[in-house]
Length: 101
Image (cartoon, rainbow, N blue to C red):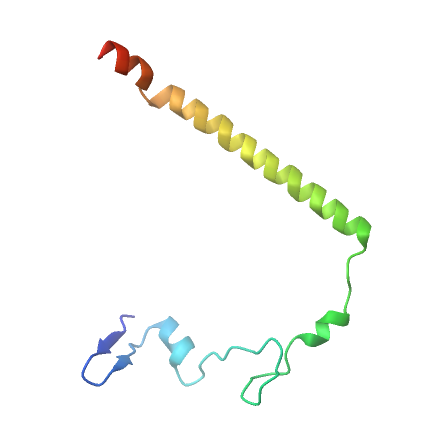
């Protein structure tokens, strides 16, 4: 939809789009509180999850190693393909400066 803003009334006028109905309609989405510390917070929070499963040192180490390997592979691929793209599609800027062609 296309929501509009009424300057005189200082309000947003929502259309009948799907997103608008989910966010501001009759059964609108309400964000659940993470901690439920305040009286106006919705839900009981997610603090109960702090006592749930925690990865041990081996799992954390393996996760860090795998993420690092993936990041290095992604970086290497980016460098490789950017150099290759420049060689294939970009003019020789240094040569252009000296030869004028």
